[in-house]
Image (tube, rainbow, N blue to C red; front, side, top):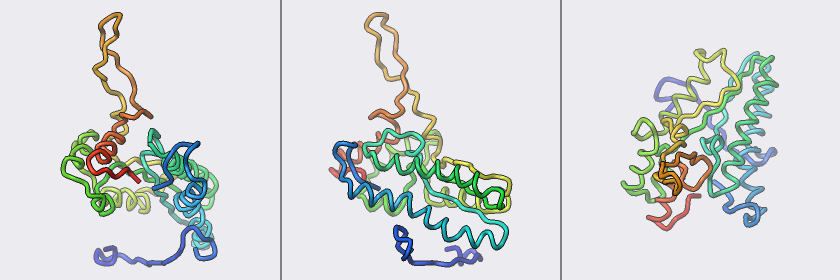
Amino acid sequence: MIDAEGGESVVVQADVTDEVGVGGAMGDATKLDLAEWNRDMAINVTSMMLMSRHIIPEMRKQGRGSIVNMSSVSGLLGGNPSLLYPTSKGAIIQMTRAMAAQHGPENIRVNCVCPGMVFTPMVRSRDMTDEMRQARINQNLLKREGDAWDVAHAILFLCGRESKWITGLVMPVDGGVRHTQWETMGMQNQDTGSHVRQTTAGKADRPALKADTLAAETTGKPKL
């Protein structure tokens, strides 16, 4: 795809969890499998550290560089049934900020992209129905579906010259879904009869979680 657009790319096959070869555990802290936790933290977090470990020396040689880490809006909002997923994505955000501070004097920029509920081949493979897709779309402010190109364009900007004075940025690409956490719940105060307005951030009815709950109910398959 990059080559077709006139660019240059290199594909390197590697085990990103293994320095030599260079989703997630479900449940709360009392129930998750420790081996799965360690494996998924290695995939989601350690792999990014290892890639930076080996590319930063090359960036130092050329006197500049740009690293874009991939996180998720779940790392910003939490409220996910899995303890592992938002924890690991939040760790990537903080790692980005720390690396930006460490390598800024070397003219190496480090930023982070946090995608929302974009529609990708992986999502399609989960037997997502039209109803489920629409439920996801309804949660963002733009009321349209994001795709991998929306995320790719954000990464392209952060890698390009147009962002040469930007580092340590955490950029959500989510159609504004993180701003829909305040909702009128339709609940009434029994004493005054007034409607109660409360935040849904981190609760079971958080926007990003509504679509996943609907998906699980419709297909019988929980979010991985």
